[in-house]
Image (cartoon, rainbow, N blue to C red; front, side, top):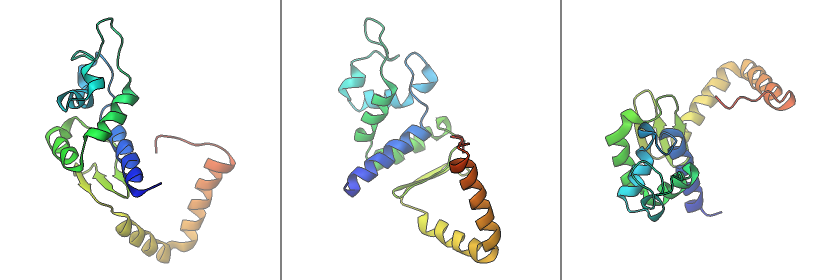
Amino acid sequence: MNPENHKAIEKEILIELLFPTPYAGSQNTLLLFSLCRELGDEYCLSFNDLGYTSDYKPFDSKEVIKRSTQFLTDDRLLSYFENNKNQLNPWRDFYGKYYTYEKKIKRLRIGSEWDKIEKNLDEFHARKGKQLHAVLMAIWEANVDLNKRNDNW
């Protein structure tokens, strides 16, 4: 898979995590849907402003998210984020290879913090090697051996 595909996949994950999941008829979740309509997406334009067809069929949320990835260039994404950051998910950070979002300061930027994170982990490992190993093994055991996964962290 080429890097552009990786970037598109990461952007789709970022959009899905940060923007409210679009649901037809729910005004406070139509941010992404409205953006796609503004940008001329044929799929979104086939629905009314509330997200329904003339026979009241709603749009597919996953399709809107997927299509928004194609329309939102990095510049548009940053601009749109700045204009709507108070309506986006306040609970999730995002540290990807191509995008970084820090919820505490509500900042989205193009680029990665992986080098900084790796450096901090190396320093932590140097100080707390055995304890870190024990915590990671406990996480592994709970999630893999005991199959007690939680999607909320």
